[in-house]
Length: 248
Image 1 (tube, helix red, strand yellow):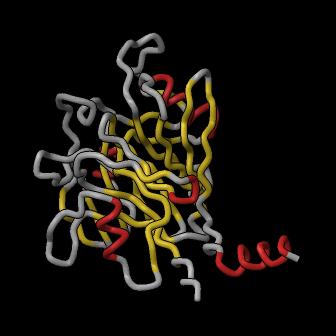
Image 2 (cartoon, helix red, strand yellow; image 1 turned 180 degrees about the vertical axis):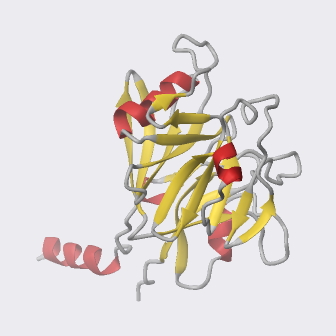
């Protein structure tokens, strides 16, 4: 009787099922947390500023700002930013462009061409090389530019070195060949670019993937008890889901 009652309470009070599923995966001796998002089942968007124009900077502030009955599902930082947390490259949120696409080479990871744009448009997504985007911009309800590309039409970025000693906690995004599934990934241990890109190409088998950042990389995934904290960031990508009903 007690077991039946406990099961009934668990069922009636549980949070609604979400399309995004996150799991830790061991790949070639390193741990990664990978979140799979079915774009037909879940709303995914970018966040930068609140209603007063101030940059959110954290997952918690976004979660608190959402409409009643809604909450932040899975989220991570979504592209490189200046010291004032403005996006370095292209940024479109809810159809409004804040920053233009940048196609020139430059210092740092962002300027390690080819870099790319993550484009979200309803139940479809794509990772597009930045110069290709500039020549023929696809429709994007939300878009963020970062770099370098990790996987380009099934090939690793040509500048990556398998034996590189440059290792960091890193996060990125990849889209499957159908454009219907978005993968958000963070390494749980420091890895180099080559290792991180191989995870997308060889484990997730996505044709295109984009590096989002390193060192500041963080993940919000309450379903697995994860809510990384740290210094404020710029753009954030996340799912918006129904909040669990409050118990009575």
